[in-house]
Length: 248
Image: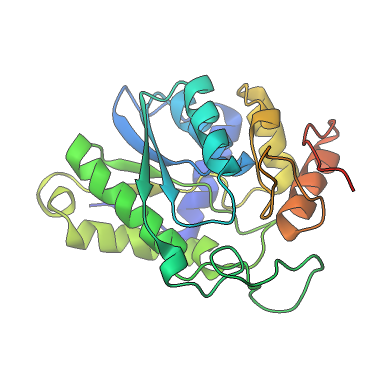
């Protein structure tokens, strides 16, 4: 069994950026795909490493469906073998501006923001883990980032390392079949680096949706934290921002 650390995730990122991480050898991998820019880059990276990719999105009661529509486009354009959407009703729990009637903040604040969805990444990775066992996949990929991010606790290297330990304790694959690996190749990358990596791998960022409150057409508000981080990423990469913004 393998236990990852924050250092492992940094090395994972460096290998991908250098184009040397061709280690999939046709093995299956489950990739969490939200429809946003980070997960699209991770899907492209997993495929470039030689994995046969199975994309997984969760319809968890988020504020809009535009990101799920974007996820379907990304799965098709980036060569996923399959794309599954699983419904998990986190709106019935609430507690977040993304799953309850709480306003999305449009200015930076202190502490963990109200756009944090309680236990979301734990739930998403757990569903991905279950599907991976069914598929016979031993690798999970997710797009968490701990550099240019909103401070969510489930985006840190410590969380990824802990979840991998859990996966190897709690599954047949972990106990009897060689172990589960959790990859977070973007975790130590800035948004500008992520944009550059994605462009090198052929990601069409115009087909991604990052905004917390995008309209029905997938147009961004341009004011929320997700929009701010996305715009800064394109600026740092020195490329034009392809995001479609809602009028006003």
